Image (tube, rainbow, N blue to C red; front, side, top):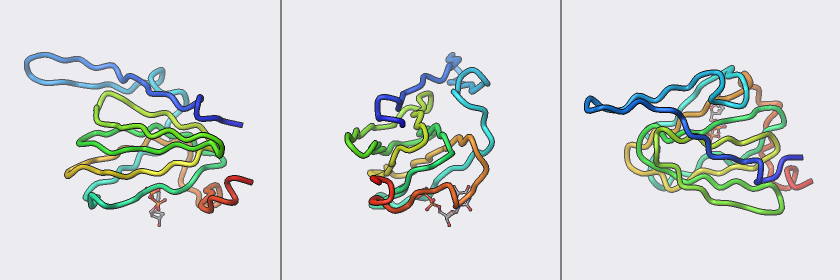
Length: 131
Ligand code: TYD
C-alpha cells in the first residue's frame, strides 16, 4: 500500500535564458507513461478540489501558473505541500487521498495521469478510503 513517503516532488528539467524559461517533460521525467492530461483553471480562490483517491491512476500535479496547496493523506499521516513552481511536479501514487485548496488568482493546475478517465477507479468517500 502507498504511504505519503511515496509522494515525491519531481524536478522538471528547464532551459532558462534571457528570453525566458522552457520546461520539458519527457518519458524519463515522470514515473509512469502519460495517458491523459487535464487542467484546472478559473478556479475561485475559496474552491476546494480533489477529495478523492484512485485505485489505478497515478498522477503528477504541476502548478503551471500561480499557486495552490495539495494535502496528501495515506489514511494515517497527512502532508500539506505548496506548489508554486512550473518546473516542479508532485507525484502521487495510487491509494493516496488528495485535496487541493488555497488557489491563487490565475492558478492553473495541470495533472498528468497514468490512466484514461474512469469514475469506477475513484474512491470519493473518505471512510471507504480509510477501510
Ligand atoms: P472532479 O474529479 O470532481 O475534479 P477534481 O478532482 O479536480 O476536483 O471532476 C469534475 C468533473 O469532471 C466530474 O464530473 C468528472 C469530470 N471529469 C471528466 O469528465 N474527465 C476527466 O478526465 C476528469 C479528471 C474529470
